[in-house]
Length: 65
Image 1: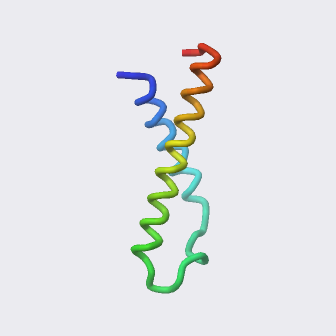
Image 2: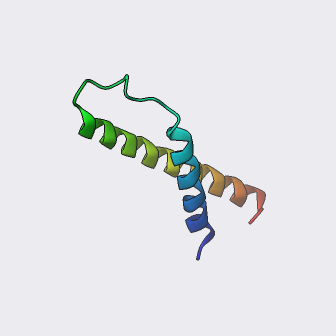
């Protein structure tokens, strides 16, 4: 398995753990549960991609891996 795969797994755990602490219920209107879930999912995907790309490029630049 590639190192990027493990970085994605690590990033997923970290992002889901950290984004779970945010109370996003106050942002959305009442009875808009599906839109809130989609927003939560898209934010998580973006954060996972950003963190993985940053870590991969950082390790590649420093030749740590």
